[in-house]
Image (tube, rainbow, N blue to C red; front, side):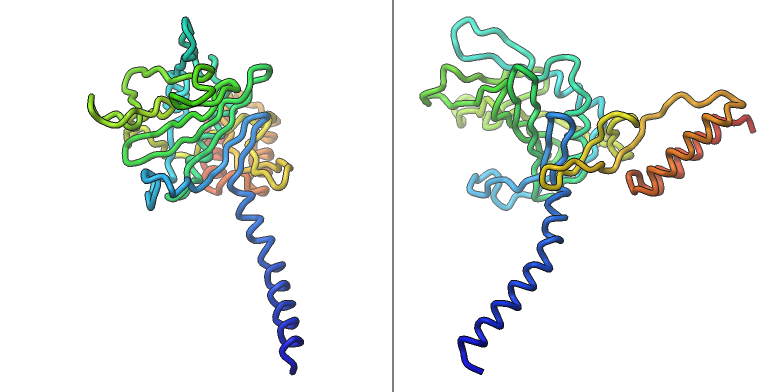
Length: 277
């Protein structure tokens, strides 16, 4: 067999093998992006050229209680660098449940080498974006953009149009090591996160019937795993309502939107509350 002919045969085999592997790679990538409405989170490996991230492993996956995360989001404040700028909330209250759910899900699915990136879009205001990750018993929040305005370091051309974070209780800036230490990154906040704050159950998303957290396959938004919040149990004798609830729960399990453990637990709760044994 001539060399040119052998080369083309080998090339065809490589291309065929590549086409077989592509769907698997695509499926893996699809599981790293989640979206609810205009808000989005995704998993990404950080820039290893930054000494802080080089060869670092994070305390991921991590399950955080929804109320703990909500309290953290409510605590974040910032102010512009222009004269007479006022201190404002990063996330207007009440904090939207969608972004809370998305961050919980992403932290729960992140691998030790990945960080969680997020984008929170407010209509008519602009995007708030950044990333979050956990090292040991510390949670890190780096904001790149707040209400459509990007963070700029001192001395840059757009510095006066930028902003800085305002520290709240138990918060500190990354890089703060005393009076003679490095200049702190005023867009990077570190907070304690105790082990007792980790939830033993999967992170909640939304009640049934509302928009779901979704893994994004090339612009589409199919449903991802969902945990239904507890709803009022049907009154004794309301067999019709109980049957509907059990049927709905069974369909969620068949579609693999909840785990077998979650299914059995919820089924038991419905039966116990629907009947008087």
